[in-house]
Amino acid sequence: MRKAIAALFLIASPVLAAAPAGLKKRVAVMDMSMAATAMAQPTGGGGTTFTTTIVIPPPADFAMALTEILTTELAKTNRFIVLERKAMSDIAAEHELAASGKANAETAAKTGSIIGAQYLIRCAISEYAYSQTGTSGSLKMIKGINLGATVLRAQVGIDTRVYDALTTEVVASATSHGTATSSGGDVKLSNAKMDASAAGFVTTPLGKASREALDGAVRFIVAKLGEAKWEARVQIYVNAGEEAGVENGQTFGVYRAAEALIDPASGVNLGTPDKQVAIVRIKSVTPKYSIAELVSGEAPKRNDILRPQERGANP
Image (cartoon, rainbow, N blue to C red):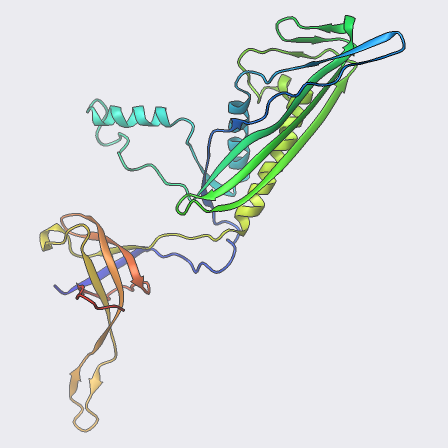
């Protein structure tokens, strides 16, 4: 079968240097975990005043809330295509709705259309210390914390790991820290379901420490993925499909014609030799055309020739 490659959809740029500004990598932020436990703080006395420290446990959904903030902050950098991974159950429900036939077939979510990430980001809260210190009479634990003339201290550490979604190779890892203290004012913190993006939380020492640690994580991710290689996949359109007998998984040799051989004595055209330059594999077939991916060799050009791949032949 002699068929010409009709067009190229997208060709990967040479993967030799860091991505220029404007080229965005696809990333997904995984659920943050709470790896640290609240550490007890010392108590002590001085003169006639007895000072006590109360360890404050993490608010409910603390790790989940920080995951949401990190996702939002990465999207705001405009350096990445941030893919949703926390709400996969919602996405699965939408796909099931489409599969049931209850959604309009033209607009329903298609199975297999979820975009894959190039890099995954996994964080863990590795350090957590949040405490209230003051005289015994000023410390109150009433459905959360009410503070008068006392001191709140917060320290948060976040371990960040970036890894390649294809190879599982860890690209980079680091720990960022945040600390904050508040004293002399009234601060209230409820242990109900936490909204870490709310203004009230952000003004607390724990909120400030969390934000500082997250800012460090974002700077680290931007810097390290800025150094990572950017790449795209070659999409090759072939002007032959099901009607021509093309099937998924078939491999073809790609041949490029050289200049015509002209007999110098007679001027007669002796033919046009060609050379194999690549091997492609069919990955999607329609009645009239198919889409192939590059297996080896150089990127095909428009009007290169496609032939069934001969056993043992290589470009």
